[in-house]
Image (cartoon, rainbow, N blue to C red; front, side, top):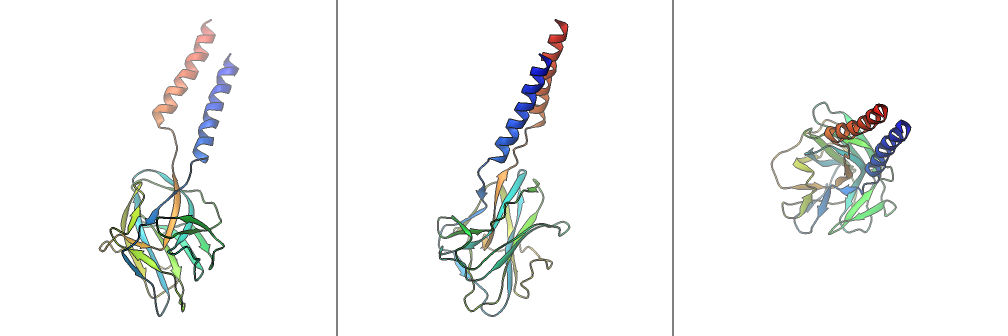
Amino acid sequence: MIRNVLTICCLWLLGWGVVADTQASIIAANYLGGGDIYHSDDGDLVAGWGFTPSANLRLTGLGVYDLDRGGLNTDHQIGVFRVSDGANLAVGSVQAGTGNTLIAGTVGGSRMDSMVFDVGLSAGVQYYIVASYAESDNPDDIVYGDSAVTFAPEFSWDGYIEDFDTADIFDPMRINTTGENGDLGPTFTFVRDAVPEPTSFAIFGLGCLSAVFYRRRR
C-alpha cells in the first residue's frame, strides 16, 4: 500500500512536469497595421524595448519581425538582458531570407531562431530585448504606434531602445520611457511558468502522508 501511494505521488509530479513542458508558446508582440515604420538609412542600429513580467514566465524563443512576410533583408543578432545588472540571459540570431520559421501576426510575422530556449523571467523584474540592424542598402523595418503594436498581457511594455551608434547588442542600453508602444523588431516567445502553488504541493503531500498513516494504523 505504501509503495502504491508513493508511486501515485511520483506519477502525479511527473505528470505535472509533462504538462508544464508541453504548453504552447505565446508570441510576445503583434503588429496590427498602421502606426509608424522606420529603419536606419545610413548606419548601424540596435533597437528593442523594455518589459516587466507580471508573473513568472519562461522564454522559449527569440526572433525578429518580418513586416511583409517576404523574408528578412539582413542577418540579426537578438539578446535579452536583465536591467538591474546588465546580465545577458539569452542570445540568438536569424538570417536574411525566409529560412527561419515564421510565426504569423495580424500583419507580417516573426522570424524565429531555430534554437529552443528555456530561460526564466521573474515577475516584477525588468528586462529588455534588442536586435542588431547592420548598415544595409535595404534595411529591415521596425514599427511602433500605440494602436499599431500590441503586447501580451503577461508583461508591461516599459519603453523603447534605439542606439544608432552601434550594431553590438552587448553595448549598455538605456530604456526610453516616453513615446508610443512599439519598436517591434526583436521579439520573443514564452510560456507561463507552470509551477504548482505551494498550497497545492502541501495539500497533496498531506494526502499521501494520511494514506500512509492510515495503512500503518490498520
